[in-house]
Length: 403
Ligand code: 7TS
Image 1: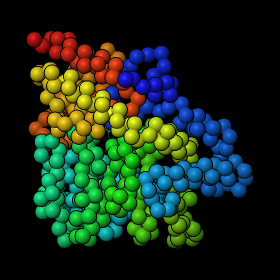
Image 2 (image 1 turned 90 degrees about the horizontal axis):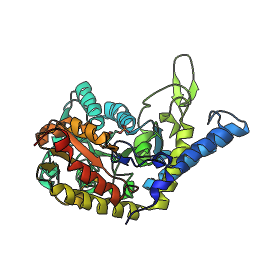
Image 3 (image 1 turned 120 degrees about the horizontal axis):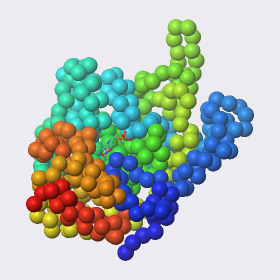
Image 4 (image 1 turned 180 degrees about the vertical axis):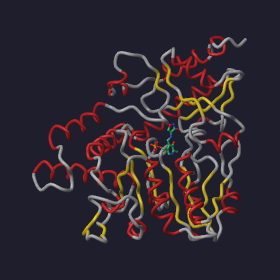
């Protein structure tokens, strides 16, 4: 069974490129581009400033995107939605603002060994600046973080737990709700990196018991340069600004300033209103496709992909054997071939996959690999693409001169 979603994307027109690098960025449907063009062509003006019609409508479009995003992830109010540039900036915002103002010497910050660098480096910075300790949750080969692991590492000293919901390398889903409940009982706040989960499944911050949630629009069919930070209102209200300047103030004197109310306190400078219009359209688009259908397609394709790969004895797949635990992400190595060569040779066949350390070097070290190749799927991929990919994958060793 194939689907027709590729028709919604201009980039797939007139070629048969197989795009299997969706964990890095997803493709953008025409509807998202149209929403951005409509903003540009009908009301481009600096939002939140002008009192004339275009600016008022630009503000409305921007704030409507905030409302839609709030509803999309189950936030209680749109003031809990801060627009940023990407998940990386969202995580840095929490680290610089909440982290630096709340962490003291001797406190502990808990993350996991499988985190993306974007959820490691900001906490290294906070730990260094505040003489706090950065504690890592370890996982097994399948990517599972055992209950005993988080129950032994999260203690009364823990003030922050920051963890990814879905790994960009193993595709594994972490027990975020259980970890959050345990961390809350110890008095810690919980930050969830939703960069790889929000595009693929319905994520509800209330159900997750998350205090903060970070994600990027570009991995969910939206534009680049647009990210989201959800934060509980009482936590955000208590945090100092991250960046300062225009638009985030109430009143400025020569010596001092008072800050604007939420969410504007955290959105210094001219905002990305066109990007917000794109994000809003991406949410509509994903809702139309439906998360049930997204999940069903990804699971079906991952099963087919892994079954085909498992027939090739020289391929090692990282993580769980069960394709349903992969969230459409299959990271692998071909014996005797460097992942960069695998990716380059597949590129000559019109196949896009990622190779390298996937910005998760501590995990690579933990798994005992230098680098890997990764195929990551989305709902617009098809069985025909999976079959063609498998056929080409079976020839890679021969093409690279390996007997
Ligand atoms: N967190 C996770 C779990 C990610 O997978 C990524 C990007 C980020 C944070 C950072 O997102 P950004 O939009 O701020 O860059 N992951 C990948 C990847 O796996 N390949 O390229 C980017």
